[in-house]
Image (cartoon, rainbow, N blue to C red; front, side):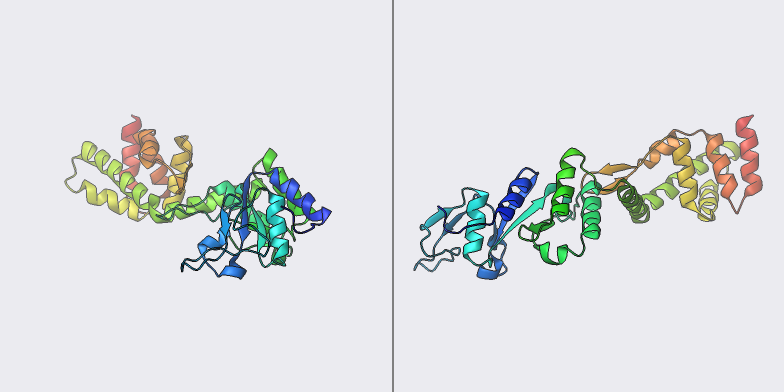
Length: 283
């Protein structure tokens, strides 16, 4: 059913975006209030108000009692008939940095990088085009040619900026380091040093000495990165959790001599002890 004429430019934007992966949203919050059910897909039904006390969705004069959006053009005509109090929005799956499951899971680094790159590149345009709904939802009335071209490019290669993505990965690694990897690594390194001390010198206080050595390292992160590179171990992205690395595998991949050598280069304490260990281990 057609009940409003749409401009060729709007129809062109809708057609191009419909060829991209994402979801379409009809935003009726201005009409119905700021409720989750006021953001609906084309598959939803739109019944009129009745006298049974239930809350039903908005309807227009002349629209059937049970009206279902069959096409994007139907949805755009509906929005136009409300004088755009209802809005047609498109959210590209490659720009969606907002999806969070219970438990605090987050979007992939690719989507988060695309999201912030797109927002930075089109900050002025988004003053009108940002639909403020799920993901980065764009109001089709205000999407520019350049914005559509950027979204279409993601269908061929799903990343807007290699540099920003690399930067974001490092930010995730820094966060993971602060959130627990540093503690895990320091404990694992201290355990490895303690075992070496105990085996070589039969120290009764090997654990305390090893912990003191690790605590006095001026930059534990530098030691970690040197060992990680030497062991050929790499950070991995965990779906919904950011970056992660197997600390035990790093240490298991290195010889005692290598571990002692790297630690001794950065140690501010027990340098004589560590140097002796290196000579003994190599011999």
